[in-house]
Length: 291
Image (cartoon, rainbow, N blue to C red):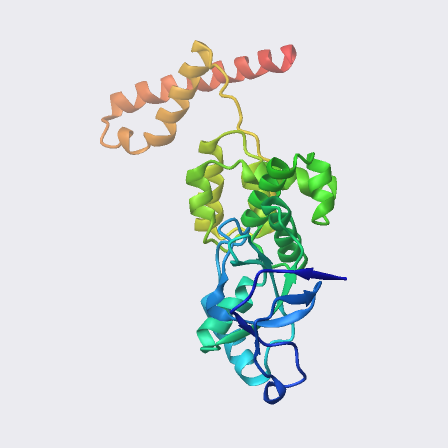
């Protein structure tokens, strides 16, 4: 089965075993479905809806070097628009590495996809299977997939190989406030730590947990423990307890207060303290009986 495309006037290279055996093919207007061809790198355009937003420049350079030394083993996937544009469906990192290496052509498979939303779904699935996405990119991709295709949370999760619990966590992660998303976008936090942040009740609590993870360098276990601590409610203190607390504080901090007393003042101070001791014993006895 073949598909016809309006490619007259373009020059493409059919797949070959080695670079030396590649020959230009002019006026290439008819091609079998899913056949690998070689496209000019400059004719390929990234998809603005691509789920992946960030690319590690160091790894991109490594891939570029590998392509120069060994060539490209996995072709990119593109779709052809009515305006004869080749839009990336999968393989933007490989395409960027080709540009970085100064390569003029790139091996590609033209997918039979006309719908932009279907292209997005394929791109998301491909990136997820390759673990190319950050947790936040995957979360936002899943949310977009639900919106674009009308999938339920469960259906969207199944499309990218995530169980219902994982899908639920990703949806929650996609709903993080913009300010929190901006802070975690470039962080090295694990997937589980991000989920713990997203599980907090409000933005203030999320920001506080994120701050503690960063400053205290909490690991996953410590983050879970911290995330599950519920703030204690301040209980109302009775007047009697307030006075007792004040007396306790005064006595603990007033050792030096009684220095320099004359003999008469010392006798009075000792009498008061003995009385306090006796009163304390009676109060303790009373409390023990009523508890």
